[in-house]
Amino acid sequence: MILVTGATGFVGGHVVRALVDAGERVRALVRDANGASALDDVDCELARGDVTDPASVQAVVEGCSTVVHLVAILTGKPDDFDRIMTEGTRSLLNTARDAGVSRFVQMSALGTSEATKNAVPYYRAKWAIEEAVRSSGLGYAILRPSFVFARDGGALAQFARIARLAPVTPVSGKGTQRLQPIWADDLARAVTLAVRRNDDLLVEIGGPDIVDWNEFWSQLKAALGTRRPALHVPFWFMRPQAAIMERLPHPPVTRDQLRMLQLGDNVVSDGGLGMTDLGLERTMPLAQQLQLAVGRPD
Image 1 (cartoon, rainbow, N blue to C red):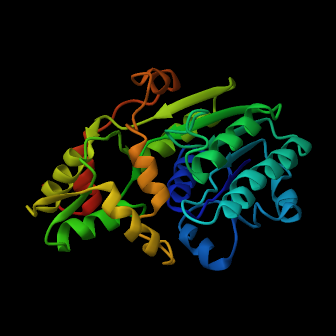
Image 2: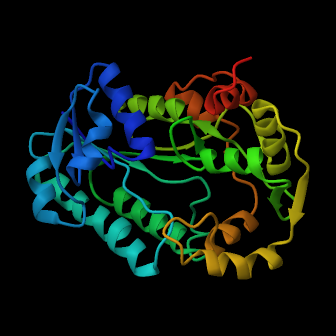
């Protein structure tokens, strides 16, 4: 039995489906009935719990040989990152070890490193989690994906709305920072492959194409069939507005996200060797994936 935390999130839904389709028995950790409805069509076991509540997690870990841990937040106060991500993961690791779990698959993020851990709370939490996983005594796989996208969630839907409706496409800075977008179903396949390995792994994961943000926006607009011009907005101009937008429940951009963009490229550092070793094959090119994601047929 595989326990998947964060099972009703954007990435979680893809992971649960991929594992079930691969013949694995899955127990999906859900916080409430509303979230559980996202998995109504999936043949998995649902278990109520919250990683910040050790007592609730203890019951759902029992009988599981593997844990796939996907819980994370993108925005919040520094204490929120510590409580939900860092402390929640440490508690889950302790519970998993006591329950006899043999493998722990952790979703991290490309860009996480000792050099970036003090840049923003998100990277600090991700690095602390990786360190906790490495020192847990459990067999582990740590996956660091680049920007994850699909039709049904993530930031792509917001980007598509901007590309469709805004008179100009705002691009942060010069738009020359490179990224390697990964299709959510490909990331889910990586998780399935990592679950079935026996060795300790740290794998950086990206899609088939490396593009900069200028190229990404161009390909997205081509997939949408729109030709709105781009407008490069300096980071210094965006920061005060991001500070205001951070007060919204789901801010479109935060100062931390701008800081992460300024740190540089977000591409795999080994040329894809780790993905090849994992058995993750290259799939359709980014342009084709974007067409599928935004719903515009060829």
